[in-house]
Length: 210
Image (cartoon, rainbow, N blue to C red; front, top):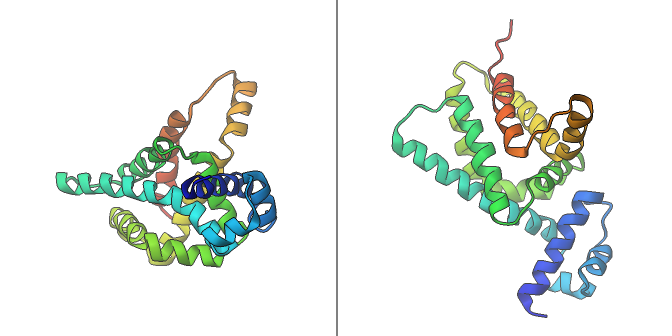
């Protein structure tokens, strides 16, 4: 088995198991057993479980941020004013769409992202900030420009309210869509759902407090 094949098998197994069971509940031995490699392979290629978790996220976040940056570059070159809806549309359509193009499951990414908060992986936050912080700050900065007059703390909370709605909707999409079919006799694809999510998420960011 080649170096590349071994790394891919470990990452594939870790991605699935982390999303299904959680980070703390998944042992390296379970990952190596599922991947069909020995425990020494994980230590050799990644060095630690934390590094493996970071590598799993890197496979999602690199194509995601590259696609989003490219979209934002195009918007900047056009010189048009970006509304909140434009920015969220880019985030959902381009960012998440890029994952499918690279063979990554957007729903699994959302489950992993949700677990990163509920199981508080501090090392992961530091890794994401150090590797992808510039992209995050650029996007958040554009959102803040589109929402003048909102104080930083309120903006922070609204951003996480929006993120929470996004994570729940996408990570639970199959179950939610099944309920839609059962209760309403209707169907909705993931792209259709993302289109519906844009105005709802934008409203969460733009709500006027009284």
